[in-house]
Amino acid sequence: MYRKTWLEVDLDAVMHNVRTIREICGKRFIAVLKANAYGCGDIEVAEAVCRAGAEMIAVSSTDEAVMIRNRGYGGPLLIVGAVDSQDLPAFLEYDIAVPAYSMAFVDEVTARDCRGLRVHIKVDTGMNRIGFRDIPDMQEALARMTAAGCRVEGIFTHFACADTDPDMTRRQYDAFAAAVGALDHAFEWIHCDNSDASVSFDAPVSNACRVGISLYGTSTFCHELRPALSLYTTMTMVKHVPAGETIGYGATYTAPEDVIIGTLPIGYADGLFRRNQGRTVYVGDQPAEIVGRVCMDQCMIRLPYEYPAGTVVEIFGPHLSIDQMAEELQTIPHEIMTLLSDRVTRTYKEDGQFVLEGNTRIDASMKKK
Image (cartoon, rainbow, N blue to C red; front, side, top):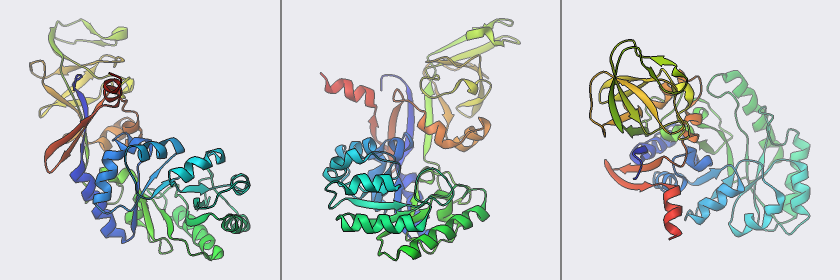
């Protein structure tokens, strides 16, 4: 690791979370690893969740599906976002299940040789994003794809407010259950339970849960999950700044007294948004305020004591969870995770030991030598 800023992924916690959710909901497990497993590393997380009992991986797009196949994942794989029918050869070559989400898509696919294509019918029950709304359209799509030789193995929907609105979730579920019943097809995969619904909502028509953020310990309802992520950096310089001097761009912070300032090699190009100014990080067990504007590559913190350069600083982790950080920033953990750039090295722990370290930019540059 050349630049001492890293995301630590606890694979033991990830596997514990998979097993815990499976035990609660009693269903087959689809792990949603879109956006490079929410920024945590798709193949690394895929291998862990599969060891813990996940039976399928879901991603958001064709490029994500091809990438995880090329990185070695060979199990059942589903794209949950809209796809282009022109990529049919890739779906077949890489054995990727895709959503049938509109009649236009069905028209385009069935006009070509689509024999063997794995398909999950996407039902729009209230997200109004992608998917069929009308049961007659679903029935026609099912009939046409089956006649064309597609393997229509699944049907799914997505809840909009499983964390906040049980009444809307119930309305969406009832619409989905009606669609499943009307199609009267032997679907292998029937899934509507996202992370929060998997542990809080009774959805007997489904036989699989589809879990993303809760893999990492975030849940509105389940307190048995373990936090899996920590973000660390190290101080590159420590200096004494006299009272009255300013810190950083725009001179937005003036030292109210003589202060000790630590400089960290992490900034908004790494995913530490500028609005983190004024928030707290931890040096050991001591809180330290981010002072001055967050720079592209660095930020400064006010230290309670003098620490040596090289001291580890926790951005989020055991002292301050990613959930708390998200609440303070008025966002969600998903956004914080996925905006961590590829400049940030990912490290992985298992059985309490570091087992792997990876940085896609460094890995790519080394392969060119």
